[in-house]
Length: 134
Image (cartoon, rainbow, N blue to C red; front, side, top):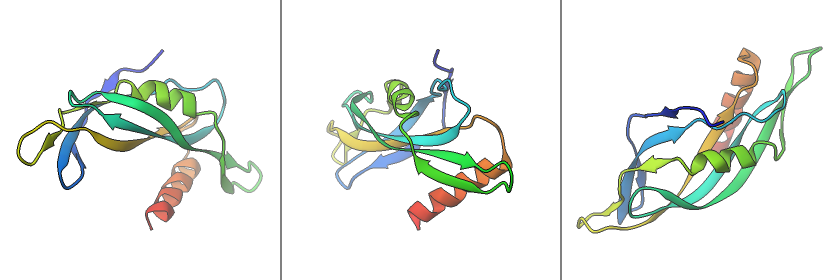
């Protein structure tokens, strides 16, 4: 079952000609596995603010070595289906051009999955995300 919606502070997304604000994110269902990680979905934002053409992108898992507490982040596909299902419930304000006309946008969203609320896992993902933005 999907989680309850998280209503977020509006986050602007867009291009030079078209923009919108994210207004709702649905928490994804958690896969039946003892693993943490993330998945990225790509989609179009329709003129009414709903999503379409949702596809799964990168999906990574955090592996923790229980002996020395080291971590590795590796590709895995386990989160993709759950992220795509949740992305159907993303909501945006209707996108608008600068002149006020309707438009559509392409966008992405990253869902993070925590099996355990472990500082090691959180730190590993933060470090990984900062290296991607870097």
